[in-house]
Every structure is written in structure tokens, then in C-alpha cells.
Image (cartoon, rainbow, N blue to C red):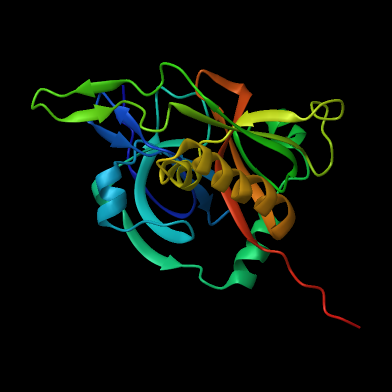
Length: 249
């Protein structure tokens, strides 16, 4: 069997999902995703947390990375990466440029990527509700051989859930809204910043519901689970910016 070769690609980073512990690589891995120059999606995994931190990779960074198709993931956008090849080559700073870019790649409905068997999409949602609830069994505390304590899923004990509809209601949200868990890293960090649970819920809800519904133009980066690649969708990234103020006549 011929070995897969590495291909150098440029990817604009739009998603950094909350990290999970990799038993295979013994490190925290971050599901990172973005858009290639031809506007196709790339899901880059595993992306080691230490590489992310060391190279200061942020949303809106254009990175160059060596990738190859993965043999154990059926999702067409997924790529294995050579972590040591990652380098930042540019960044989009201008807010107007960012807005125009998001408008260009947004989908009117989740029906389109579903029919095309794509497993990533960007949608500007009609947000209806946001809930926070305690989960069980996801944030198991374990100890490594050297005695270091870690959580297999450091944000797994709290579930952040959105109810929303597509801007052009799809077959699935015409009658009732989508309900999806949010794995955006920044949002999970926001909740974990507060020691008081009541304050954490209030602050996170203020931003993720009221802020993103009323104060900001908001976009959901959506992805599917590898075990149910064409049916189980999740919010893997949040993007937002202040609403445009219409000039007075």
C-alpha cells in the first residue's frame, strides 16, 4: 500500500474547539478548523495544545501546515497534520474585511451541506435560546504515571446548548429549532473563569444569548461528530462582531 504524502496548505483559522486529552499522544489536542484559499473547509486534528500556545495561533490567523487525508475519519474535510510544520503567515485584522469574508462563506441553510455530504458549515443563526447544564461523567480526573493530575475533558462537566434556526428554515428547523451543544473553546473558558456557579451562568448567558442575539452579528461554525458524520451536528466555533450601525438619513 502506497504511503500517503504530505501536502502544504494555507488555512484561515476560524475554529478552536475546547481541548480533549489524547490517550494516543498523551497531550491535550484541539480540534482546529478553517478555510482554504478555495473556500473549502479543513478540520485539522490532532492539533497539540502546546503547539497552539507556543506559536500563538488565534482565530483569523492564516497558517501554513502540512496535511494528509486521514484513514480513520470518514469526514472529507478532515486532515491529519504534521504539527511541527505549522507556521503563521498572515492575519486578517480589518473588521470590515472579516465581515465580508464571513458573509461570503455563510450558508443560508443547514440543508445544503447535509445534501452535499459536507460535514462543516458556517451559518448566521436565528438564536432562540441558550442553556447551561451540568453533565455527568465527561470530566473524569485522572493521574499520569508521573503523578500529574489532568482532566480527560477539562470542560466536559458543563454543557452549553443553543436553540436556533437557520436564516432560511431548513427541513429540520421549520417545525422546531435545532438544539446543539457548543464546544467553542473561548465560550467554555468564559464559563470556567468564575468560581461562583451562579455568576458563571449569568455572565456566560449574558454574552452567549443576549449579546450574540441582540448586540452582535453572530455566526456558528458547525461540524459533525466522527461517529455520526452526516447526522449529529454541533456548534464547534462562535464568531461575532458588533452590529453595523445604519447611517442616519
